[in-house]
Image 1 (tube, rainbow, N blue to C red):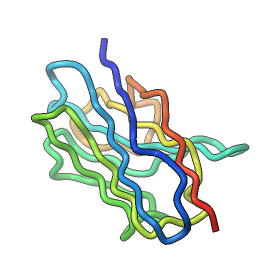
Image 2 (image 1 turned 180 degrees about the vertical axis):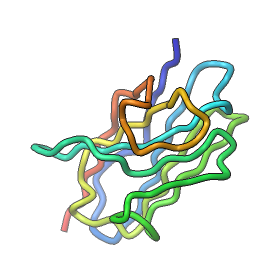
Image 3 (image 1 turned 180 degrees about the horizontal axis):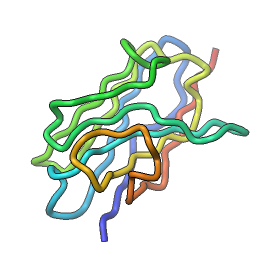
Length: 124
């Protein structure tokens, strides 16, 4: 069983930055794509960013391109989401997830394991 634990959420003013971390258990971390999703109150969960097992291939939803950066450290079994120039509309619970595939995907059903989520609140 794979366990994912997110950290790094919090309250920040607009224009600020946060870095989310997601620590994963298991021995085959580098074999699978990882992704970040978010869910705002009253809205459906949406894809934010994903990257391949090696970290060489990344994908971002248009609304965060140029502001967020996803990365991973396979030696530490950890994936990160650096979030800069945060906006109030970025407020949501952020979830990391592990795919059962090597390449990144925007499809939530292709992610097998999910973390418990971490709250990000951006005040205006």
